[in-house]
Image (cartoon, rainbow, N blue to C red; front, side, top):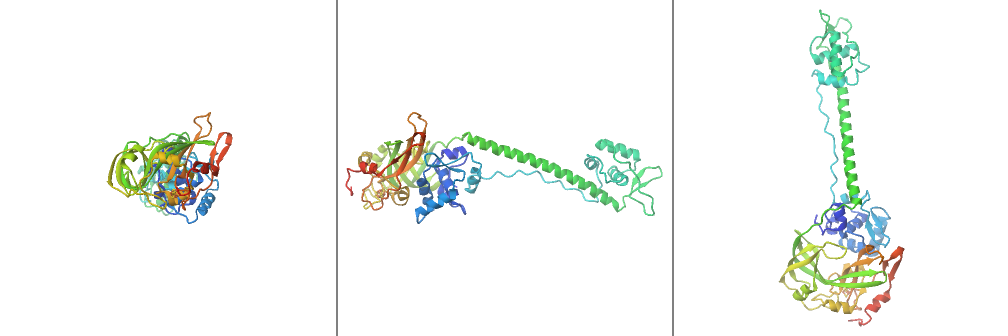
Length: 470
Ligand code: SF4
């Protein structure tokens, strides 16, 4: 599976950041799993439109509204997806359900379940009992159902010599600390019994007795029970150790212990499939401001050893120099974006550009428009209208008038750290473009749960100076 740029969720979870294009290849994923995958790819909270856009990208739906309903029904408030106060959706990284999703998405291999070593094989009934076996068999005392004959037979079998009842007693005390029942010979009968008495009065085991195999089998049943008990105890220890390890990992995630992000320069190359402005939008309730940072190249090519689509952030100086346009074949190096909340690109600090082939510089008409994009000043002067995220994904990704912006929202001006992040899509193109769809109005969260809705008049005001075809 190909790694995307490192992101906050991936770092907290200790996984490689996923790409939806890879994740979607897994069989029978539910919409909720795709929902989680989209959030993991992003590395932070998303609006529902952004989730729709991401899922639609890899699993196009004929009717986006049906996709929206499917995602919502699939979620139904269940963890680990949570709805934040600003209306965006995020992942509760401390949820015990996160692991299950990571495994379903192929992002985390389940730890092998530890298992106790297998039970040792036991000898068959032809093999005499050993003293070690007897020590275990009698560790909790001689079984109450065992007669003095059976008890004597087992001891004589292990010691392999005639013994007086007193010697049997001493041997068993030495083995397990208690004497056991009085050792006896079998009752006299026409057929020699299991234990007989010799002329010296000692007990002798009759190894030809058919009862000997039963004595050994009964002794080894107790032996097997002892080994099972040991194995169960070992398994319990391993299970407890595994649970403790998983719990520590969960706590570490909740405390935000993270791994170091990837660092270093990444070489990339490929065909430019879109050039759009790189603009960061800062919102503070009903106020907004733009930072015109440069341009974003959407490239289809090789990055980090994989062939895929990726975004490279460049400065306006590099764009002015190279006049990148759709169809260019370009290579260079860049660094993984350190704060994905603040950039839509995968790489930034790009340099070492080499242009191997050029695409057409003339602008195409009607939209989506390609060719050399205008300067940032022209974008600023034109102003933008909001653009539905799904329309952007379906029709405007290659248009030089489209823009996806990283949005930073200042929730409380008195608390500088109270900020939230999301992405919004906009159109700088002609108001007559038939592809255009505004999508739902956007709401900006503020202090104490308040929110401000950006009404249509804001867009009308921003583009009032342009005619419908400009
Ligand atoms: S809606 Fe805007 S971004 Fe989309 S194709 Fe038309 S002009 Fe381009």
